[in-house]
Length: 342
Image 1 (cartoon, rainbow, N blue to C red):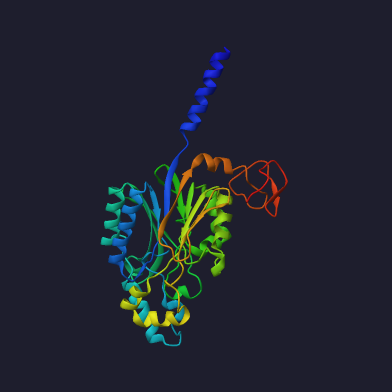
Image 2: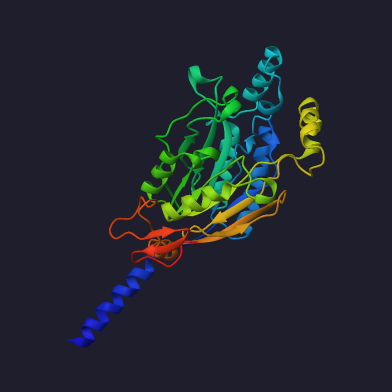
């Protein structure tokens, strides 16, 4: 009887371990091409090929990698309505359609290279919304199918001149390579309702494409949001930030480049870009240097996600039920959780 019990226990253990999933994922840190949809699409496919060669199964991009951030919104003179309308018209023209040739090419590449793609783009509306542009995340799975489109719920400050408001209904998980995957953009990561929704969905990995920066030495603090979301959702968090090549911008948009040169005269790129990864325990795993172009990767390990569930507090855990641990300054004050959450 004892031997039978032992065999059953071993079989159960093996069954649990068999459910564990390990998937290599990546976040692209690379310059965008402002309002150059065709060339940006080629860049996306190049990054997909490179990631595939490195064994990556799910790949994400900086905010609005196709189309680009609305760069005029910071530097244009709001009193000059005529120029403002011209800039907006150019921005609309540089956006893409969900059923357009750019998405079709990327869908084919995703299928060919067995790659889940978290594609970021300026996406035009349909029908009467044709002349509206949405800051969108398009979830394309490894079979080349569009599983979800999340349009940023609300643009920030003067971004509203260029981006239309989306909705929160599309903040949901999709399945890629056996993982539950979710994503929101930039300052959505600073909205407590958005963070709550992400955590309640219980994804394995969250992608946070952004315009913000990571490195504290250049005034970036976006890792605060990444750590908080990683810990509360018990998920891996990957993010990368936008940047542009000066030469590319000066060639295509000399007036815009001149305005930005007055603000950032000596930087190697416009915006420092970069990428960062946080683990399900809220710790930063990897970060690029400012202005560095690379694909930052990590292995999403569902066993480590399960282990992270020992780290929870009464104030910031949405996913867990049962006994709580109270932490003060990252150190355990009471409860049965880990000694530290950092």
